[in-house]
Length: 207
Image (cartoon, rainbow, N blue to C red; front, side, top):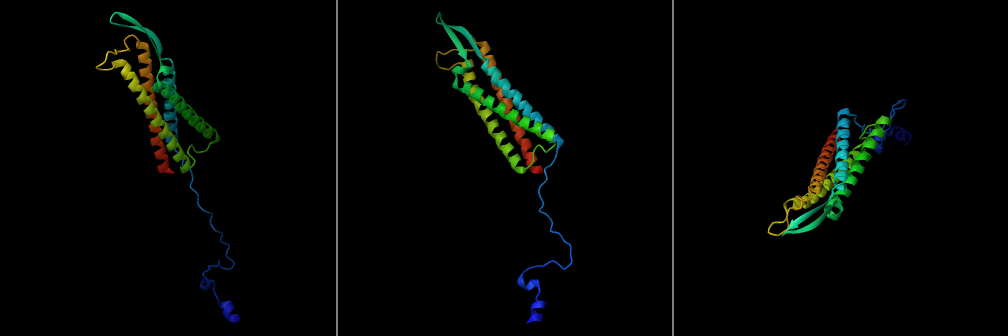
């Protein structure tokens, strides 16, 4: 019985034992290493900086959109006053532009902090997924806000067909021009945020 016990090897028990006297050390589990790509870093900084500038321009131009004028209908002079805060769509665009600007600024500050610490801008796939989600959310928000404000601006410029409402942009040209410029900047901010989302996808493919 003793010889049987001594001759029993580990394979019969389903256990593999290391050879006697070997100094083999188990390998540590491999972890994914963040990829450094200077070109993607520069592209990410450029698109987020452009989105920040466009969002700030959209907000500041819309806040400046106000004007007084008068309209003559059937010989009667009617005083007019146009201001962005009188339209729910334009107020929504101002709020969304402020949020998109704050988001882009936060991302730029995060990139600057990581550059000072000399760590990768996108350290993991989870972080890249978070960036992708945030960029898409704010891109769609700017698109929806700009579209709603554009509908109101177009109504002010063309008037309402089959009714007596005229073109309000003739007596209020400054208001219409500023609101149109603000809407254009909102669409450009949306485009730059969408470009940032594309860069996020490239990061995901490289990690």
